[in-house]
Image (cartoon, rainbow, N blue to C red; front, side):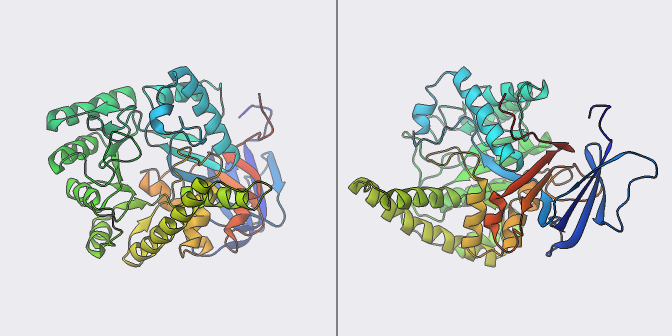
Length: 422
């Protein structure tokens, strides 16, 4: 913070969501000291040390809350519907610039921490260097770098293609050397054209080698799982977060497996369900169908399929929650048609699937931070934690759509200039 500015900042608002309590604190005040939170309470109980200058901001009928934590993004993505196979053909320089633009969009929308789950070559590491040099604004970056895939597997065009236990361990060591904060594994196929979405990729021994090596370096591992067997293999391997968590059999049938949900809960594994991307696309197609131009027959077919798939995923989401599984919100933007800067749709989808407003907020703050192994720094407002703060006009616990009404964003105690386009 420049010497001309106060070291202490006092924020006041009608209410505060701290990410810990299951209720909002009324008539709230938060005292920031530099980059950290010093006190939390009310205007009557929170005071700066006597005689020090304090910058005070009163937001009136607003809510102070933790900055959002999006535990699943792809910074290289464009969100224009192109497949990842085409995205990977773009030059690294273009993808790095795209990553910078996406990071800015997310930050300005209230996301103060993001976990990137797979990028081409060293593009996101180059972005982090630019952020550290003060060249571009960004949320806190938790980066996997290249994802670990089998030959021809999902995201193999971005990542390290490994076969066998030794190559899997070597891949983890290489990524740690390059600066990875965690390891992203594609444990099943996905949208990659040469992959098989409903079948496992690595075997359990390979997955276990990846997870064990990550843990040996104090890192966590997150696995893309688009089928039930993929989830079982990842659980056997000691995975920390299951991404997507899709209950599907090899024949494509949607068969919910309560035994898998019970194991996830027993092992304390997080699930990042990524149910907002479908909601975003459904909304876009519905809006187009209500406009001046009708959607095509192909788009109508896509819309019908998405509606059915979304209903199934939300039903499975609710049943996993009932089994005790912790759902950590992550958007999976900018993949497919889901552009970055709209994490709110994922949070709204969690509410649509049965979470209360407060539960959906916690899934996108504290629980997402826990999934990222970053809960000691971010995801909640507590003395000593980083002053990553989102202020929204209104009460998001009553209606999560209020999260779109961003009044201010702070990262490490610094107020983000969201009008700065330079």
